[in-house]
Image (cartoon, rainbow, N blue to C red; front, side, top):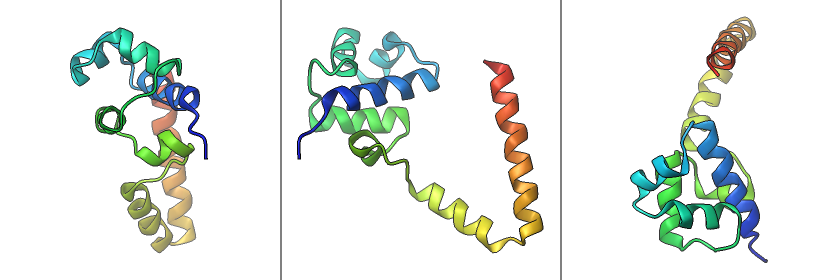
Length: 109
């Protein structure tokens, strides 16, 4: 299996932007240069395993997402299981509440 570093870098860049972080702000949090971050995000330089794990920690993502694009974490599983325990009516209410939060976030941007 070949590792697609360009895709990994793209996922890092996307998540960084979702969190409204510049490369400079990420540099300060990770203690690597913004030029190194840029090289990783463009796929021109492969990150070390330690750097990948640090990206996961700082960007609050999991390694599976970076490598495979799979968004999955323990919190998601717990939340899904809790929602499944609710009645269909309450599941619909939860969905509406989430829609309100998403709309608020859209307006903030």
